Amino acid sequence: MTLYNIFDRYLFLPLGDLVYGSCVVAKLKEMRHNDHLTEKEIRNIQDEKLQRLVQHCYKTVPYYTKLFDRLGIKPEQIRTREDLKVLPVLTKQIIRDNYNDLFSTSVDPKRLRNKSTGGSTGTPLKFCTDNAEWSSWKASTLRAWEWYGLHLGDKIFSLGGNSINQKNNIFSFKGLYDRIIMRNNKFSSADVSDECMQRHYNTLMKLKPSAIRGYGSALYILARYIEKNNLPVCPVKVVLTTGEVLVPDYRRKLQEVFKAPVYDAYGAGDGGILSHECPKHEGLHISEESCIIEITDEQGNPKPDGITGQVCTTDLDNYAFPFLRYLVGDMAYIKKEKCSCGRASRLIGEVMGRAGKLIYNKQGTPISPIMLWIMMYPQLNYHVAEHQNVYSKIDKFQIRQDKEGDILILLKIKDPNEPKEQFNYILDNYRKHFVGSTVDIQFVEEIPCLPSGKEDYCMSEYEYNV
Ligand SMILES: [Zn+2]
Image 1 (cartoon, helix red, strand yellow):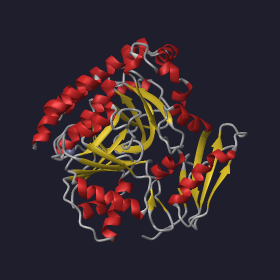
Image 2 (image 1 turned 90 degrees about the vertical axis):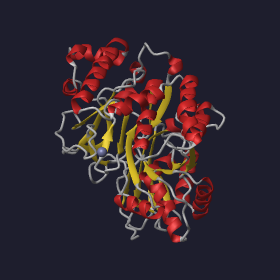
Image 3 (image 1 turned 120 degrees about the horizontal axis):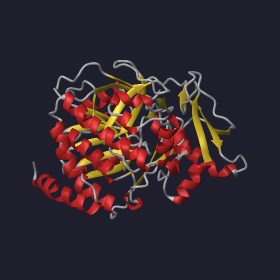
Image 4 (image 1 turned 180 degrees about the vertical axis):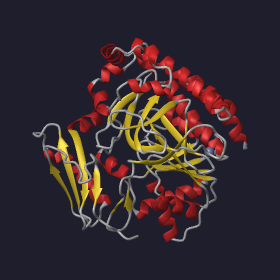
């Protein structure tokens, strides 16, 4: 450990908690301890937190009070993970329709943290969390980094879209937190041109980080650029991927080019899910002390381990805007086996739904589905009024790429009488990424289901042979 690591761990992080009103130090200590617990001990923590949360929801969250009363459910009935099935699932649509009723009346509005996330239908969802939830999130990430020999204070180079690349004012508290405590240097993956890749490469070499982090697809594009140009790379401890499903090809390429192990993570800010691979690479360890994950059908009927279904999550730490049995919109399964590393937490096997089919432009550069979404909402701060204005005009969208590689954007806007020119920025964004393809927008009244029957926001028939 360097001197910076020691200062960061024992001085900056506790100081951050003090200024921010968070409790990362305490949570991290707790999580390190939980790593050695038995399955039964973890279940006890989970059950106890669940009972407390359900009582809180019934007493202080109008949506849940009404729901429990309507269904004749008493909060005391829900004592374990298995009991949750008496509750109906919470969908994105229910959240939109009951947004104001989902806030707890006992939480100080000043302590709320506004968040937003994309959805598989392309419509953003806004929600809130509080400091405790945020602290668990950070602690769970830091615990996983420790598994890989990465310590707080080690430099990180991050490449991604919105969720890992919020443009924080560098002098804001969050900006300072990122730079000084997390030492996370964030760069946008929106531009995939060679010039931009060269800039990222130069930064990387200058920064000499301990870890490279980002969307698998964004890092893959950088890795391919480095490989194509035969550029030397500085040694890194690990490559950390997040935000979308890590395709095996990407993992191989990242490992080859950066000469470091690749660890994937799967999380959903809405729903408090965090899960990380351990050095055994046998699946993603769920942070069971922070969330309960069930795999269900669309109605919330649980599926057995080993069977793929909807990810349905209960966030055990978000008391401000509680999520009980929330359908995230991803598909996954939970492994029947435990990890050979000895940790008792359950493992998520494969996650589906965040990658879909990869889309290539005519130059053979992969554009990940998450980027298609980002290009639609270029200023991704859902809570800034003028951005909200743009978001609020788009209801849904779908991107279709035909066999020739041309792009058609189906756009359903809320008010058909809106002047269409204001959406031209979408065309500009897409044309920048799909050079040589025809890109058009078609305004539609309804977004059709894809031939697979699935409601999704991208589909491609274009085959690019890499
Ligand atoms: Zn493990």
